[in-house]
Amino acid sequence: MKDDKKEKSEQRYMERIRLIKDRVVNTRPEMDLENAKIMTESFKETAGIFIRSIKKT
Image (cartoon, rainbow, N blue to C red; front, top):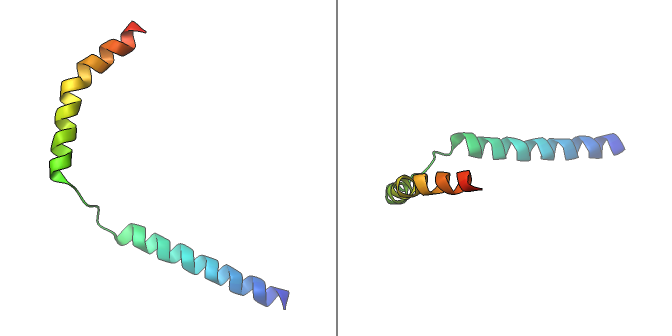
């Protein structure tokens, strides 16, 4: 009886893992090109400032 419960529990657990894995593997990443452009410009503008502030410390 306990073995049956344990086995069913393990099967449900493995099924959840499989579903999560499938979702991760089969989901295409999305890109927001406007946000990427803004982030890139921001990194370029602040890169030197950030490095200098670290060196002062």
